[in-house]
Image 1 (tube, rainbow, N blue to C red):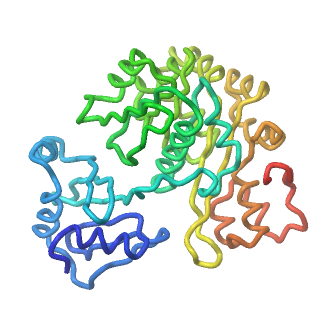
Image 2 (cartoon, rainbow, N blue to C red):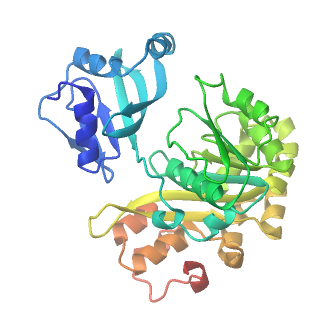
Length: 362
């Protein structure tokens, strides 16, 4: 059993783990390539878990935890790296999960993204969403996009985060990283004020509520590039979720704004590799053309998948096209293809040739 939380965090990084989990009546565990790996056979008691966690908090953070029973924060460990921590209660006891944040922000190409993601970084205005479930690499993609913009343009980038994860260098842009709870009280307040701070690019770590989404859409409409994340599993669901947050009487206006301002959705998931050597990125990309914008205006979201399939020349691709490429090249197994795909018929029997536009894979 480790005597200090830094020992557990160091071990997590050493074995290639992405997360450390501390829970009472269970051993400390790391998530490695999607699977949990316990460090010890001995279970931690509630007092030990609480002490390990509390030792990482400031007095202000402890007070917030006592009041809200929840806490998001960033933790810098000397000689180890930076972590995003979430402390919470379960059955009356304190628990926590710590996500490791690599100090080096990776290049977009090294993440396995299609070149259209780099094209999003060249936009001067509009809304670009990076979506996926928890642990799918949204924050890493967003940070890589900010790095690309900072390297290739001159301007002001304002990030609104809870908490600040990747720490950016200014490069050829001025980057202002603001943390909710430390530098500002809320996403809506920070986003509203950001419009008065001469930004070229606004980055929102997560679109959590109606007011944040409303202001983000307005910012995207008025000449700013807005990059944000959302917890959705595919592109049609992303469009539907944004609209559905609003009351019915406000939805027509939001639909019109979204159809005009949306410039891209990249929905990603990490899929275990067939060789057992980690995970590979699968993505669904929505890049609105005239037909897709009309589809959004008319709220015919069931047609979006078909329009993405035929709109590959504009950079669109469906998750099934992405998975088909990974499967045909023996990067993932049939089992994983079936688990992650939208249309199981494509993979249930060995296809002679999966119909996919070849040009989108180059």
